[in-house]
Length: 191
Image 1: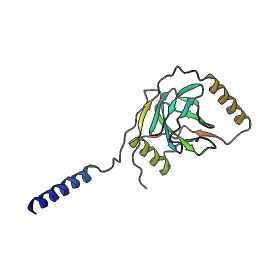
Image 2: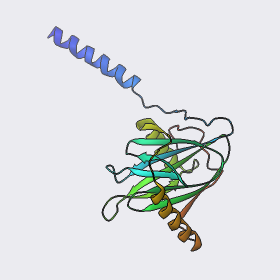
Image 3: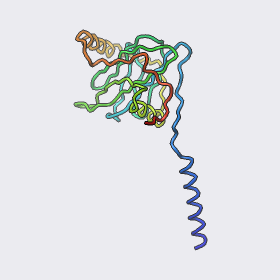
Image 4: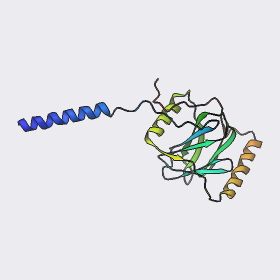
């Protein structure tokens, strides 16, 4: 009985320390761009866990984004057209300032045959957006942009044609990421 009490006491101490030291991280630094550059985090959330979304900056293929990963892309400041391909294509026009960090969420949507994608600019003033960013950075795996040699010219041409069609119709299907939507960190948001 005495040994059982000692074992129980050791378990209680062990689990007490485990609970104390396993408190969730509430502050998380994020990568910062090189001087004069902009940095874009592209997250993947939502439906389509088995589908990789293909992410582009106009005519530059940034990579395939799998669930549980987020893409970090350093680029020149200024005007950009980010788009993603899955069952559909979705677009964001972005105005990026130098020395700033922006976040885009590639949300998986249920599609007819496979998951579709909805690109959404994240707003650092929105609790929900800050919470999603915190969770993805905390639990996800970083994927840095690396130039690809894959020939994506056909996909790019079709996507630019679709973009021009939407643009000519003044479609509200093209989201906008404004220069003021800068993230400073990926801290756990509080209400």
